[in-house]
Length: 145
Image 1: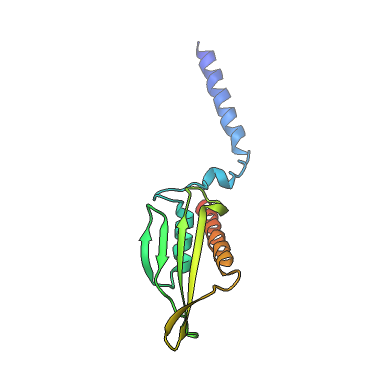
Image 2 (image 1 turned 90 degrees about the vertical axis):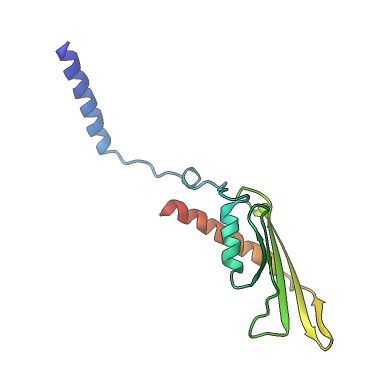
């Protein structure tokens, strides 16, 4: 009986010492930082990234449960005769390219007041790409640190 317990302890000790020299495989990003992070009603990475990117603009409405961020009018100091307003809707709990919808309105100052003007080509697409890139960076940072 004593011989069996000594043998079991020896086997356990050898197994644990053998494991000390082995290196663990690094965990994949998806195993550590899931694409679906929903401490709020929508994807938290997209939400945080949107607030980070649009943080310089005044906010008119911010609803994390509905996933809507609407900025107030913003005019850049170097171009006070032009202003923009942006609406971002986060549509999903997953971090995906089609989980975000952005619309922008641009106005220019004329003699009679502000008039609607076309948004420059690629502005909305560039904004989407910037937010998605920032959201991916936030996700990577969560499992890296």
